[in-house]
Image (cartoon, rainbow, N blue to C red):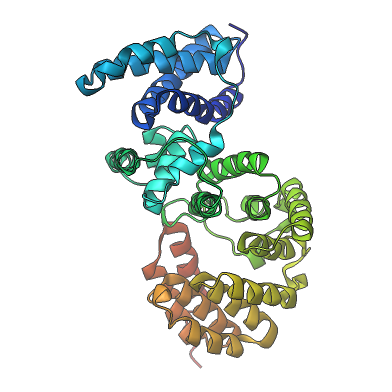
Length: 415
């Protein structure tokens, strides 16, 4: 054992090792379900033993050995698997030095994003298996009951087993679709952390940090993939604004009103360099275009310096490449910033016919903002209140209500 390390460094080490250890076990045993349970128990053992006893000389080997032995105990409890016990025991007794150094993180990500799973299950299983988060941590991060998360993970593992999926990289013709699924899951994790869809906190840093960490790992595995680079750049450029997004009481500060001096300059520089490089060397994809839009925002010293015409061009490209309701709604704002709020309201009338935007609080919020810019304060106030009623995010609700309050008619002074 070696000396102790800081708690944040220790937690980061376990997060990094979790997918490698699970990958090693699944590769050897072919059983994702029992291996994943065993790795979670090994991580728990490490979290309690290493702070007291010090870091092992070979942390990965220690975790693999402990997880392998725990898996044997789990196998012994399952009569249907008793015939595999001897083989599992032989594998577990190998010295750490003989264990494979292959990092199976990418294959593990692919397995967690198997097409037989729903996006919700993919997110939960990825956070558990690749992120190394416990069921309780995932439940807190996603603001759902712990039994619900446990059930999702259990069903996901059962579905993977029933599908006959093997622990290996997909065939070349399957990889683009599977990588796209992985990127979508990481994108969902980041977005849920950056603008929490419900609850009292606007941002859940544990989710944004985990999404960025996993995307960095994916970037290391696929350095030539433009969309992987684009997604990482998008996350960095967006998360860079986090220090300026909320007031001390947790209430929301919109982009135009943020103190840009608080933005993370290091993350912005890294994100801009990344997206500049990948746009010049790789086929353009949706994540790259979104990152380019984020870069235009971040490069503006003041909100009024934002190059909205460039943003509108990028949204037009994005709309052709990956059309969707969110793209339509964001394009409406760009149109309004260039051609005026009335033009934006006309665009909004078309956008809100999309079923996915029906009764969505963001439609009401955008309408309220444009009506306020147009000088129709009474209609703007009603739209802000409607948006506040429809959102499940407490910080957003407070912000929208405060905007409505600012537009409330004041009592006249008696003559």
